[in-house]
Image (cartoon, rainbow, N blue to C red):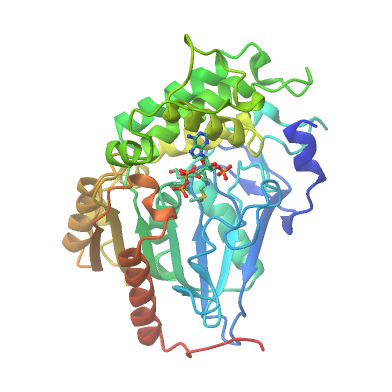
Length: 392
Ligand SMILES: CC(=O)SCCNC(=O)CCNC(=O)[C@H](O)C(C)(C)COP(=O)(O)OP(=O)(O)OC[C@H]1O[C@@H](n2cnc3c(N)ncnc32)[C@H](O)[C@@H]1OP(=O)(O)O
Ligand SMILES: N[C@@H](CCO)C(=O)O
């Protein structure tokens, strides 16, 4: 069964905003669907909500098993009762981004005007649009101010957009492994990924669903390349070194050509990452969202110096980077922290020592978990939140 048919079989929890959303490009998207998951109990004062923003290929299943892969949620070790983002205390909301392929309005949705799926005609969106769509969901919950907005990588871009666009609605913000703008290097990597998709003969100019095909190879290669950027040389060396694969490779992962005999373990690993990715992601959605990342430039969007944007902000920031992250480096986080300090904002900064690269924010890192727990506990005390709102 094709990935799209699998997706349409899934029943996500969706809020439909009939009035829709006017995008930065001027186009109106109506109705607007936002697929989301929640965890914990909203306090009577509606003051304990945390919005978690996912990264490029994440989704709303932050702590629930993923409905396609059946794997635990992508932050299941971080979000739950007694965990650093403690659902006994906080009401956690995570939504699939606008343009995503897990139930929110995106390339797989039907365009009201044409009655056809958007496919590659889905309009260009920005981080501003993504957070504006999330704000509709937060309004739906009648939450005036979020206790915290938290996210890593592209999720961190959304955190910064929230803090910049809705400062009065964000008590605390945690931008993790991110940057105030997408670097030239990251745009370059995204472009290679996109070209891999375009080069697939099954791409059909983005109308692959009409042709009943999938640009699986192109999307798989895009993921293989991108995945290298999520790791580090040390992590790859430790995991695989120069070892060759001893046993035979399962057929499904072997449909890319082999060079001579045998395969390095690292090649096998990347093939696996590529082939598992295409089962859970839509190529047009990947193009839309990766482009939204590329457009992200907070200062340019606000036509202001970064410090100016946060000048009157009362949000408490905790900026986190990972020492071996070369995709969103510590240097970029420091740039943000310097601007926040110039703005007189309340900001703390932690660089987590790890050799696991960018995706370290998804992995067990005790120092990271302690920082998350400590920052939220301190901020909750300042916000006057109760220790628990557990429903029972
Ligand atoms: C932030 C968000 O919003 S969500 C993010 C979206 N989700 C993701 O990115 C998940 C995909 N990414 C990953 O799995 C990333 O590698 C990580 C960093 C998150 C996980 O890291 P780790 O737990 O260290 O797992 P690792 O990178 O070793 O990958 C394990 C997988 O590779 C497979 N694998 C490991 N070695 C090999 C090999 N030599 N050959 C083939 N496959 C291999 C494992 O079988 C496992 O497969 P599975 O995921 O299908 O069970
Ligand atoms: N590996 C994560 C983080 C990338 O920034 C993802 O695919 O979304």
